[in-house]
Amino acid sequence: MSGMRKISFLLVMWTAMICMAQETASPASPPTATATAPRRLYIEERIRRVQGSSVHCDNYGNCFGHNSSRERNVSLDVTREVMKECPSVLMVTDNRDAADFDLRISPGSSTLYRSNGDVAYVSPTRFRVSNLAKDVCAYAHTSP
Image 1: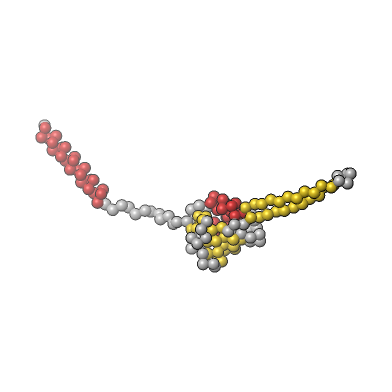
Image 2: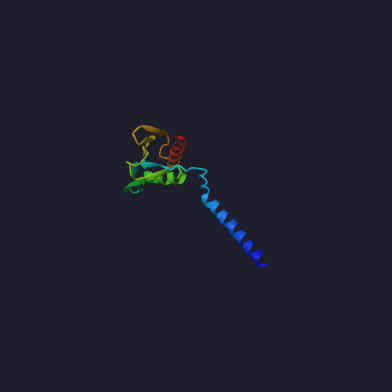
């Protein structure tokens, strides 16, 4: 009986060694989907300033003036929306030289330029940050 146990033990060990050798010798399976690196987007700083003044007069003829001004960093809002909408396609960068695209935000329409200065896309969105981010992301999805 002890001879049979030795033979079975040797057979099991030999089979295990062959299996291990086959696993290490077989090439690794290639990845099924290659992920493309997101392209870099530089967004020019755009601050929208709104100023206003008003005058209020009471029944006794006393008038009070009030000046107000507000600032809104539109480029920061667009950055936030682009990062939320399409992080796998566009990566926002602060390095203009390393960027693939340059987004210039203006009140009428915003323009997306390629790194060589050519116009890539003109968005008709007028200061609607979420729509501008969707437009730019849609263009980046479809452009080569």
